[in-house]
Image (cartoon, rainbow, N blue to C red; front, side):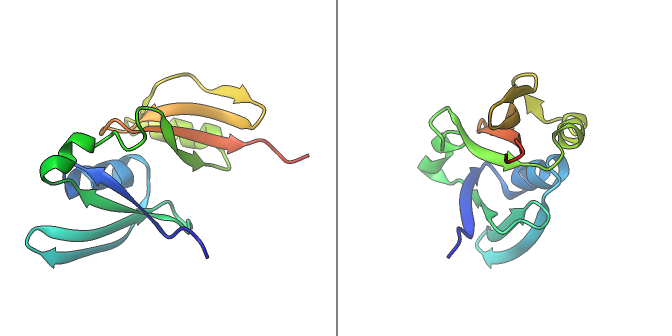
Length: 128
């Protein structure tokens, strides 16, 4: 088994695609019209096994956009080259909340997506 999809609330599909594809460099895996204004939109980093399902929030769900982690970091994006990806994301307008720092588990910096979710960009430390 593996974790296939994580649904993430977005205001619109276009807002979600603009962030995940244009700013983070994810790929669109699927964008299927389901009728009635609903779409099945899956995105993922190149080569990733786990994908995000962009879920357009409706009605009461709108209050939870950006709050799925309760205000703490809840998404962890691993990279094999922190400097490369930090620079590319910064150039694409990703809002980092702090300067990169070195921790026992690797190099990390917190960023916030345009919806309010907090993420860690992490290059894991080399295994001993």
